[in-house]
Amino acid sequence: VPRLKKQLSVEEFSKHFLEKSQPVIVRFDLMRHLNFTTRAYTLDELLEIYPNHKPMVYRYGGYGQNQEIDLGPAVATLKNNVDLKKTKIGRNFPRNTKVNPAAMKKLGLSYPPFVFPGTTMMAPSLWFGVSTSSTKTHSDCCDNFAVMITGTKRWTVAPPSEGRLIKPKCNGGLCWGNRLEHADEHAYTPAMKKLRDMTQLVSFDLNPGEMLYLPAGWFHHIENVGPTIMVNYWSKAKPFFQQVLDGDAEEVEF
Image 1 (cartoon, one colour):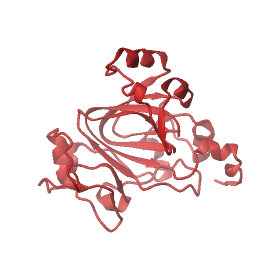
Image 2 (tube, rainbow, N blue to C red):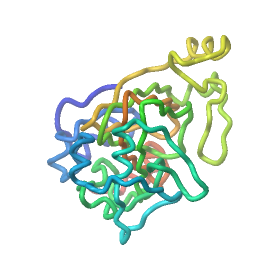
Image 3 (cartoon, rainbow, N blue to C red):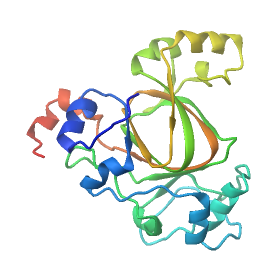
Protein backbone atom coordinates (compact mmCIF):
# COMPACT_ATOMS: atom_id res chain seq x y z
CA VAL A 1 0.00 0.00 0.00
CA PRO A 2 1.69 3.24 -1.11
CA ARG A 3 2.21 6.28 1.09
CA LEU A 4 1.50 9.53 -0.69
CA LYS A 5 4.56 11.79 -0.80
CA LYS A 6 3.08 15.01 -2.17
CA GLN A 7 -0.10 17.05 -2.20
CA LEU A 8 -2.73 16.05 -4.74
CA SER A 9 -5.86 17.76 -5.94
CA VAL A 10 -9.19 15.97 -5.59
CA GLU A 11 -9.09 15.31 -9.34
CA GLU A 12 -5.62 13.75 -9.15
CA PHE A 13 -6.51 11.62 -6.14
CA SER A 14 -9.65 10.44 -7.91
CA LYS A 15 -7.74 9.45 -11.04
CA HIS A 16 -4.97 7.55 -9.26
CA PHE A 17 -6.84 5.95 -6.36
CA LEU A 18 -10.65 6.29 -6.24
CA GLU A 19 -11.24 5.25 -9.84
CA LYS A 20 -8.77 2.34 -9.59
CA SER A 21 -9.96 1.08 -6.20
CA GLN A 22 -6.38 1.44 -4.96
CA PRO A 23 -5.68 1.78 -1.22
CA VAL A 24 -3.33 4.57 -0.19
CA ILE A 25 -2.01 6.23 2.98
CA VAL A 26 -1.98 10.03 3.22
CA ARG A 27 -0.40 12.21 5.92
CA PHE A 28 -2.65 14.87 7.41
CA ASP A 29 -0.26 17.67 6.41
CA LEU A 30 -0.63 16.69 2.74
CA MET A 31 -4.35 17.56 2.93
CA ARG A 32 -4.12 20.98 4.58
CA HIS A 33 -4.47 22.71 1.19
CA LEU A 34 -7.93 21.11 0.98
CA ASN A 35 -8.96 22.55 4.38
CA PHE A 36 -8.50 19.28 6.26
CA THR A 37 -8.21 20.36 9.91
CA THR A 38 -7.91 17.04 11.77
CA ARG A 39 -4.68 16.58 13.73
CA ALA A 40 -3.03 13.86 15.81
CA TYR A 41 -2.96 13.94 19.62
CA THR A 42 -1.10 12.13 22.36
CA LEU A 43 -3.11 10.68 25.24
CA ASP A 44 -1.60 13.28 27.58
CA GLU A 45 -2.72 16.10 25.27
CA LEU A 46 -6.23 14.68 25.22
CA LEU A 47 -6.29 14.37 29.02
CA GLU A 48 -5.62 18.11 29.22
CA ILE A 49 -8.37 18.90 26.69
CA TYR A 50 -10.83 16.67 28.58
CA PRO A 51 -10.06 17.14 32.32
CA ASN A 52 -12.90 14.94 33.62
CA HIS A 53 -11.43 11.47 34.13
CA LYS A 54 -14.15 9.92 36.29
CA PRO A 55 -15.28 6.58 34.71
CA MET A 56 -18.50 6.68 32.72
CA VAL A 57 -20.45 4.49 30.30
CA TYR A 58 -20.59 5.44 26.61
CA ARG A 59 -23.95 4.33 25.31
CA TYR A 60 -24.40 2.10 22.29
CA GLY A 61 -25.42 3.86 19.11
CA GLY A 62 -24.18 7.41 18.74
CA TYR A 63 -24.15 11.07 19.66
CA GLY A 64 -25.79 13.85 17.64
CA GLN A 65 -24.47 17.30 16.90
CA ASN A 66 -26.19 18.82 19.93
CA GLN A 67 -24.63 16.31 22.31
CA GLU A 68 -20.97 17.04 22.93
CA ILE A 69 -19.26 13.87 24.06
CA ASP A 70 -16.84 13.98 27.01
CA LEU A 71 -13.88 11.83 26.01
CA GLY A 72 -11.91 12.36 29.23
CA PRO A 73 -13.01 9.16 31.02
CA ALA A 74 -12.38 7.11 27.86
CA VAL A 75 -8.91 8.60 27.35
CA ALA A 76 -8.06 7.89 30.99
CA THR A 77 -9.19 4.30 30.44
CA LEU A 78 -6.84 3.98 27.46
CA LYS A 79 -3.99 5.61 29.40
CA ASN A 80 -4.36 2.86 32.00
CA ASN A 81 -4.76 0.23 29.24
CA VAL A 82 -7.99 -1.08 30.79
CA ASP A 83 -9.75 -3.69 28.65
CA LEU A 84 -13.14 -3.06 27.05
CA LYS A 85 -16.05 -3.65 29.40
CA LYS A 86 -19.66 -3.92 28.25
CA THR A 87 -22.88 -3.30 30.17
CA LYS A 88 -26.52 -3.40 29.12
CA ILE A 89 -26.42 0.27 28.13
CA GLY A 90 -22.92 0.80 26.81
CA ARG A 91 -19.14 0.45 27.14
CA ASN A 92 -16.36 2.03 29.18
CA PHE A 93 -14.99 3.66 26.01
CA PRO A 94 -16.39 4.33 22.52
CA ARG A 95 -16.08 1.57 19.94
CA ASN A 96 -17.81 1.97 16.58
CA THR A 97 -19.72 4.85 18.14
CA LYS A 98 -21.42 7.13 15.62
CA VAL A 99 -20.64 10.77 16.29
CA ASN A 100 -21.37 14.04 14.58
CA PRO A 101 -18.08 16.02 14.28
CA ALA A 102 -19.74 18.78 16.34
CA ALA A 103 -19.96 16.28 19.20
CA MET A 104 -16.15 16.38 19.31
CA LYS A 105 -15.66 20.03 18.33
CA LYS A 106 -12.75 20.37 20.76
CA LEU A 107 -10.71 18.11 18.44
CA GLY A 108 -11.35 20.10 15.26
CA LEU A 109 -12.28 17.09 13.14
CA SER A 110 -13.17 17.46 9.47
CA TYR A 111 -14.38 15.07 6.78
CA PRO A 112 -11.80 13.59 4.38
CA PRO A 113 -11.50 15.84 1.31
CA PHE A 114 -10.97 13.12 -1.31
CA VAL A 115 -14.52 12.23 -2.29
CA PHE A 116 -16.57 12.97 -5.38
CA PRO A 117 -18.55 16.21 -4.88
CA GLY A 118 -22.05 15.39 -3.70
CA THR A 119 -21.08 12.02 -2.23
CA THR A 120 -23.05 11.32 0.95
CA MET A 121 -20.99 10.12 3.89
CA MET A 122 -22.18 8.20 6.93
CA ALA A 123 -21.76 9.73 10.37
CA PRO A 124 -18.15 9.24 11.51
CA SER A 125 -17.40 6.23 13.72
CA LEU A 126 -15.18 6.68 16.78
CA TRP A 127 -12.94 3.74 17.72
CA PHE A 128 -11.03 3.53 21.00
CA GLY A 129 -8.87 0.46 21.55
CA VAL A 130 -6.35 -0.84 24.07
CA SER A 131 -3.26 -2.86 23.21
CA THR A 132 -5.20 -6.14 23.37
CA SER A 133 -7.86 -4.99 20.88
CA SER A 134 -8.13 -6.42 17.38
CA THR A 135 -10.67 -6.62 14.57
CA LYS A 136 -11.18 -9.93 12.79
CA THR A 137 -10.80 -10.25 9.03
CA HIS A 138 -13.73 -8.78 7.11
CA SER A 139 -14.68 -6.54 4.21
CA ASP A 140 -17.11 -3.62 4.09
CA CYS A 141 -19.75 -2.57 1.60
CA CYS A 142 -18.46 0.96 1.27
CA ASP A 143 -15.32 2.99 0.72
CA ASN A 144 -13.57 3.76 3.98
CA PHE A 145 -11.33 6.60 5.14
CA ALA A 146 -9.61 5.57 8.40
CA VAL A 147 -8.08 8.53 10.26
CA MET A 148 -5.54 7.81 13.03
CA ILE A 149 -5.76 10.30 15.89
CA THR A 150 -3.66 8.52 18.53
CA GLY A 151 -1.43 5.44 18.49
CA THR A 152 -0.71 2.91 15.76
CA LYS A 153 -2.82 0.17 14.19
CA ARG A 154 -1.28 -2.71 12.23
CA TRP A 155 -3.40 -3.51 9.18
CA THR A 156 -3.27 -6.67 7.08
CA VAL A 157 -5.27 -6.28 3.87
CA ALA A 158 -6.17 -8.38 0.84
CA PRO A 159 -7.85 -7.37 -2.43
CA PRO A 160 -11.46 -8.41 -3.13
CA SER A 161 -10.20 -11.08 -5.57
CA GLU A 162 -8.96 -13.09 -2.57
CA GLY A 163 -12.57 -13.78 -1.67
CA ARG A 164 -12.18 -16.93 -3.80
CA LEU A 165 -9.91 -18.28 -1.05
CA ILE A 166 -11.33 -16.58 2.03
CA LYS A 167 -14.94 -17.51 1.14
CA PRO A 168 -16.50 -14.92 3.49
CA LYS A 169 -19.91 -15.15 5.11
CA CYS A 170 -21.87 -12.00 4.28
CA ASN A 171 -24.72 -10.27 6.04
CA GLY A 172 -25.79 -7.35 3.91
CA GLY A 173 -22.65 -5.48 2.91
CA LEU A 174 -20.52 -6.76 5.80
CA CYS A 175 -18.54 -9.94 5.00
CA TRP A 176 -16.64 -11.85 7.68
CA GLY A 177 -13.66 -14.00 6.75
CA ASN A 178 -14.20 -16.59 9.45
CA ARG A 179 -11.84 -19.07 7.80
CA LEU A 180 -9.08 -16.43 8.08
CA GLU A 181 -10.16 -14.85 11.35
CA HIS A 182 -6.58 -13.74 12.05
CA ALA A 183 -4.63 -12.86 8.92
CA ASP A 184 -1.32 -12.38 10.74
CA GLU A 185 0.99 -14.22 13.15
CA HIS A 186 -2.00 -14.81 15.46
CA ALA A 187 -3.52 -17.40 13.10
CA TYR A 188 -4.09 -20.24 15.56
CA THR A 189 -5.01 -23.37 13.59
CA PRO A 190 -3.07 -25.27 10.90
CA ALA A 191 -5.86 -24.60 8.38
CA MET A 192 -5.88 -20.85 9.15
CA LYS A 193 -2.09 -20.65 8.87
CA LYS A 194 -2.19 -22.47 5.52
CA LEU A 195 -4.92 -20.16 4.19
CA ARG A 196 -2.98 -17.11 5.42
CA ASP A 197 0.11 -18.27 3.55
CA MET A 198 -1.90 -18.87 0.35
CA THR A 199 -3.64 -15.48 0.43
CA GLN A 200 -2.25 -12.32 -1.17
CA LEU A 201 -1.80 -10.19 1.96
CA VAL A 202 -0.07 -6.89 2.67
CA SER A 203 0.69 -5.65 6.20
CA PHE A 204 1.52 -2.10 7.26
CA ASP A 205 1.28 0.25 10.23
CA LEU A 206 -1.10 3.22 10.20
CA ASN A 207 0.43 5.87 12.44
CA PRO A 208 -0.99 8.95 14.18
CA GLY A 209 -1.38 11.77 11.69
CA GLU A 210 -2.11 9.41 8.78
CA MET A 211 -5.28 8.50 6.88
CA LEU A 212 -5.89 5.24 5.02
CA TYR A 213 -8.20 5.12 2.02
CA LEU A 214 -9.47 1.52 1.82
CA PRO A 215 -11.87 0.86 -1.07
CA ALA A 216 -15.03 -1.20 -0.66
CA GLY A 217 -14.55 -4.96 -0.75
CA TRP A 218 -10.96 -5.03 0.49
CA PHE A 219 -10.48 -7.54 3.30
CA HIS A 220 -8.74 -6.23 6.39
CA HIS A 221 -7.57 -7.46 9.77
CA ILE A 222 -6.44 -4.92 12.40
CA GLU A 223 -4.27 -5.21 15.50
CA ASN A 224 -3.54 -2.39 17.92
CA VAL A 225 0.08 -1.55 18.69
CA GLY A 226 -0.66 -0.02 22.07
CA PRO A 227 -3.72 2.16 22.88
CA THR A 228 -5.32 3.82 19.85
CA ILE A 229 -7.98 6.31 18.81
CA MET A 230 -9.28 6.28 15.25
CA VAL A 231 -12.14 7.97 13.43
CA ASN A 232 -13.39 6.39 10.24
CA TYR A 233 -15.71 7.67 7.54
CA TRP A 234 -17.70 5.36 5.26
CA SER A 235 -19.37 6.58 2.10
CA LYS A 236 -23.11 6.02 1.75
CA ALA A 237 -22.95 5.92 -2.04
CA LYS A 238 -21.84 2.95 -4.12
CA PRO A 239 -18.06 2.51 -4.28
CA PHE A 240 -16.23 5.26 -6.12
CA PHE A 241 -14.90 2.94 -8.83
CA GLN A 242 -18.46 1.74 -9.46
CA GLN A 243 -19.62 5.34 -9.88
CA VAL A 244 -17.01 5.71 -12.61
CA LEU A 245 -17.97 2.44 -14.32
CA ASP A 246 -21.65 3.38 -14.23
CA GLY A 247 -20.96 6.84 -15.61
CA ASP A 248 -22.20 8.61 -12.49
CA ALA A 249 -18.91 10.45 -12.11
CA GLU A 250 -18.69 11.67 -15.69
CA GLU A 251 -21.00 14.59 -15.00
CA VAL A 252 -19.13 15.69 -11.91
CA GLU A 253 -17.20 18.93 -12.26
CA PHE A 254 -14.49 19.58 -9.68
